[in-house]
Length: 86
Image 1 (cartoon, rainbow, N blue to C red):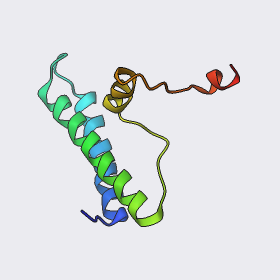
Image 2: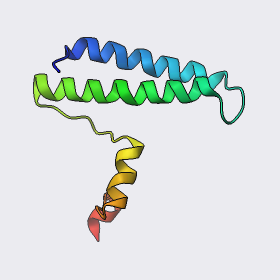
Image 3: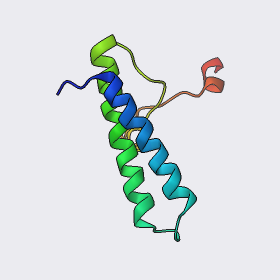
């Protein structure tokens, strides 16, 4: 799937705004609007990241929480800046 990176960026930024709005007006710990906005934000980020990589061979400095947890489960270690000196 090829997506225009500018369109993907616009959709990602809109997802950030929607997540903020849902979070700011949360109705309890299990608010379905917040959960839906969270998932939409994650999906929009992945689309943007794929588009920017495809178009410009560029990556972002971010990882989705599930990806980080999967890496831990797989035994992969992610270094913090403080860990690089060890």
